[in-house]
Amino acid sequence: MDIEKIIYDMLTESTGTHFLDSGGGSNRHWQRNQLKSIEDFKNEPHITILDKDTKYPYAEISVFHHLVNSLEYLEDETDHLIEWISEDPYSYKDNPEGRCISAMDTIEQYMAKNYANDDMNLVHHTNTYNGESSLSQVLQVISVGDTYDCDVIALSIHNGADVRGGYTDYKLFKINCESFYCSYMDEYQIEDYLECA
Image 1 (cartoon, one colour):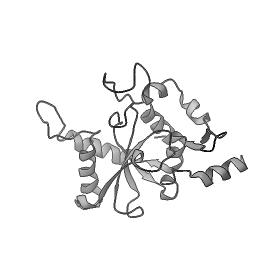
Image 2 (cartoon, rainbow, N blue to C red):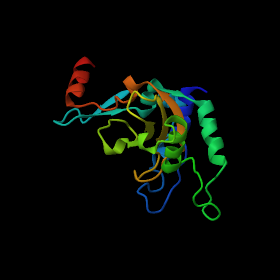
Image 3 (cartoon, one colour):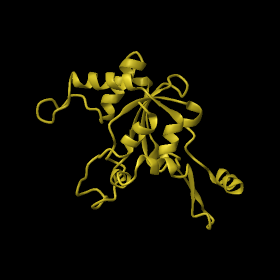
Image 4 (cartoon, rainbow, N blue to C red):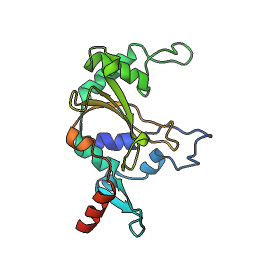
């Protein structure tokens, strides 16, 4: 399946609403993204420098371009994940300990089982909100081992309003380590970018 279409589908996936989140009527990422076509995403700039007329300019890297340029969708592996989840599906009433495609602990178990010989100590999760990131949306990544130990990740995109909730279903991807983890532009890189632009 085409990587651009997969990323577009994830960026426009509804992650719901809640009266206590800060999204109001239509200010969640998925709601704003659903107003865009895939062509709109393709045509947006890869990098936008904001507040460039101030002492503190900052960069925003298009999450669409970043993911399209650094990932390969693993359709068969994602189908296997979905099949594994369907063997013991979560149900609030009937199976509260069941598996769920959007639950981090479920995906961690799957990654350990399939990519780390059942060693949960090798499974890591990263939320880009908790570190230096210039991406236009927050990512939740489940990986195995050190950066170069396993090039398969489970990815969920934050499509809600409040970063504590509103994440897409996970999908599996093969990453280009050299580009995937380069998602932050510091002040010197911004200065160089502006000089070359």
